[in-house]
Image (tube, rainbow, N blue to C red; front, side, top):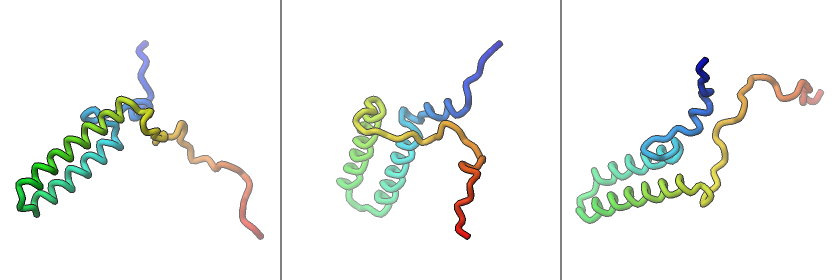
Length: 94
């Protein structure tokens, strides 16, 4: 009988272009901001520097992904998800 992984375990390891989802979102935010800056920029030097900045940011983020000890990221997903109340006691004051 075939065993399947739990979906939450798959989400923990999800990567897009070699980056975890949170770092990929940071990269896409930078790219969109850069595109807006390029639209309103009239200098060729600014456009080249933006491309270099985005390339450098991607290189730094991939290095951080390969060596996670440089920055300690806390876990995004909880171990268990439940709607159960944490305590049956009521904390309301009478």
